[in-house]
Image (cartoon, rainbow, N blue to C red; front, side, top):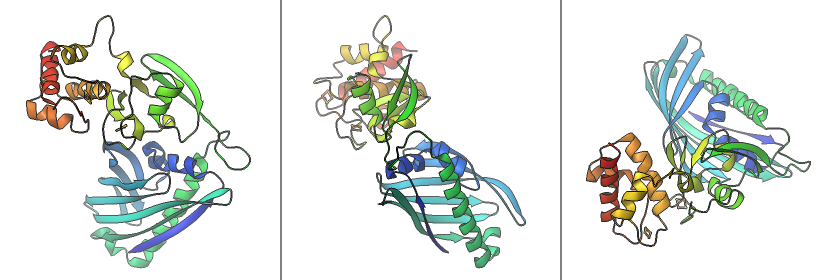
Length: 308
Ligand code: FES
Ligand code: FES
């Protein structure tokens, strides 16, 4: 089954990109989706509820966002294997400026089996059209007032975040990444930028206790969340991981170290007694150009023992 469509919005592409990349917004506006739970970078467990003719069912599936080119396009892959049938669908979502506004278009193909497929091609195409219409209407409703000036250009949106225990409120451009917000707005320069493309892990911080590459998250997406940077890790004394990195010579130039330590904090929270291999796997998203990793692994093991 092939489907395509487009809709023009009167606002800037960056704002729409931001909304389209927010799992909470997507769950709210996508017909049939009740919840999107992030399980890996760009991968979500989706909880669906479909009420359509003889079908009234809740089931889970997987949604993946791939080949992201901000703020212009991404590929959405949906896979469902449930009692009502199987769905394997892909769609290219594109955003382009047009005058003062932005056109969002989608084009894709889907394969269905089971009860869903038995509904017939014509019915399904009608349903897809109706869902697209409701999706775009939902997206219109998500566009905040006050973040846009007359010409449709984005100015700023308000955010409120807790950083290292302090509540911070600022107005930021929707395109501002979290790492830039931390470094340039709040002056917390312990979070480093190595690649700016989510490859090296130097910018890792904790967002609600989870290790996140802050070059890959917009500041507005962190709204309402709790963030810990390297500056907030030590209390009266060094955190056991900071101390162990120091003792075991887990750093040389120190560029990767804040990200490495925060990724290790999240790792030990998930797995308090990791093996050598589990540490290497847990830190695979963090690159170090100096140490050869051996002493980093030793430091994490020592910290795990201290934190028992
Ligand atoms: Fe964020 Fe490299 S700067 S991963
Ligand atoms: Fe230099 Fe890791 S200590 S990059």
